[in-house]
Length: 565
Image (cartoon, rainbow, N blue to C red; front, side, top):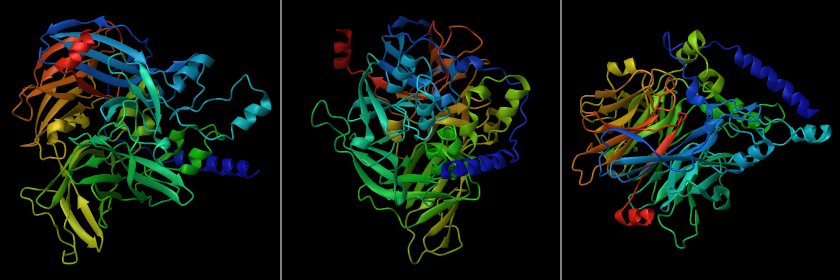
């Protein structure tokens, strides 16, 4: 009876929420259909040749690895959300100006169980599994009282820990993967090593290999955000996350409604956690299966709350007593963070509304005509912004005046209470970026310039639900260079430095470009990072869905010798 009463009250709350007004941020008309971008494909586990147009620089030697969803239905059952699709791992092997392609579905428990039952048997972020039809009525009834089990469908990114490659999503399960074969070699559970219920798919790595990440934990005392540290090297060949530790735990402002976060920022001395007003309603999530609702139903945007920047010292684990506040914003990806002249500068992609994640369901992405335009126009665009946080706030720091003394900085930071500083941002773009729908999937010359002052970043322009241009932003003058072709949809750009590079943008940008209007014509694009002119492309004779994140696995000469063997 208590469960029934709870369900009824939650359903009433849902109806009230759905009655809220829908905001419109743009008035775009005539968007082309991109339905094929979220169409299922078969994997290609054996390498196939590509057609080279132009020139792929011969100094590029390694594997460009990509991750994303590749199967959007199992049997007669369809997934609901873009991030629910079964993980498909891609490899573009580049050597001597030639490129081969292969892909392989991640051999996760979710994938194997779904395949075995020929239906969706494991719940995902936006899809709740139905009771097993092979069970009797009583068993099926009882199964609704179980909570959602975490999926191991790691379809978000490739990450490295201690020199090994893993694929990751945001649950507690990762899979170690061989970057040469794309085969799954080991399933790794964060909770076996530290007390967390998951970790982001966007860790940060120091030059020595030490890696930082974040993960939540849920206890009887409430929800906590945990800063995780993983050692740089292995003591034995077969170890994974041994030696991982929780650097510090930050209690959630609301114990039962912690903030959702997709990533975090890192400077030379600090981890920066952004507690944003996208909230997780743990009660809804825990009762989701009972109500036949997915985890995504438990996410909500609360614009009455401020955004809070938490600073954690990487070497001591001490959390700064100063809380840096900003108006409500939504951020999924940070660009860079660095310390200079007593300030911590954090650059990120942000929007003023946090409802986008729940709108990226597959049904919306497969719409056309006015219905597709409506979906796009109700999504708030993300733009690059800079916040400047004063690090030396003490007893003598004045109140109610701008503490930022950096020349030409438009951002402000004002002390409003003993341990509170309210911040406003500076736009890292000109008006021309509005023509390209903002910018997301930001990347920099990470290995040389992460945690340091920098000049350039790269990303996708979003004049559609997915990226439809590639953009290079020069912070000196906020000038842009753009690559675009109608009907072609580039994914996250990845910067690869050229040998003996002397300047920040000496290198290439690589991006997988999806062509939904042309069959089997997806290609790997290589741009000169300095001029943003196309150098070459490798056309793949199979269809590839639009993916999320990737990385470049550089081969040394020794590695190449063993690969060729």
